[in-house]
Amino acid sequence: MCSLGQPSAAVSPPHGPAPLAPGLVRRMASFVYEGLLLFGVLMLSGWMYGSMTQQRHALQGRTGLQGVVFAVLGLYFVWFWSHGGQTLAQKTWRLRVTAADGRPPGAPRAALRYLLSWLWFLPSLAAIHLAGLSSATAIGSTVLAGILAYAASSRLLPGRQFLHDVLSGTRIVDVPAVVRR
Image 1 (cartoon, rainbow, N blue to C red):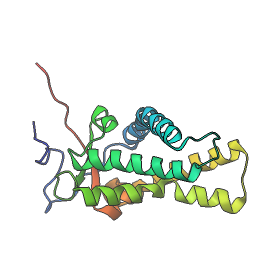
Image 2: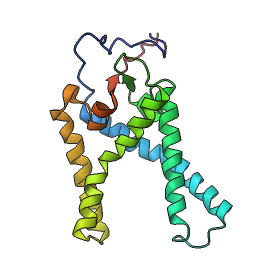
Image 3: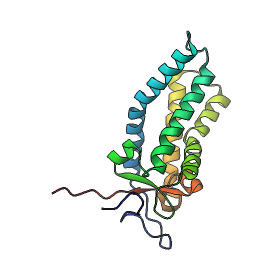
């Protein structure tokens, strides 16, 4: 078993070839599970924002709410990635974010990874804006297609990592299962 500061057996030393990322289905399952877990966190954040600003209408102060949601998500991910390399969903799915040396990324690298992770959504959001889409079905389909294309593009990148991992100098690795006796 490895400590949080030491590379796991699944992480190769910096001078060796980078291991392939865990399977895409498992990483996407972790992504979906993360969304389920964060639903409650974001509901609480939205309620607190609405209470503190005395928001009376959903469109009133929505830019501020978007900023709060962005900050809350950033704090959540940066904290977990820089303190052990795993969010709650990543622990469940036995995934870990590491820097090139196999250790959890520091806060600056984790923050860069968080900012670059929005690349998942930017192409589809730009397409929605440029095409003038307004129906929920068209918007949802475009976002889903963008996410699937981004995920599939990892097959073409070094170590089958996502683009934001390649650009931020991080990678997703397997965490070996702990055998309990």
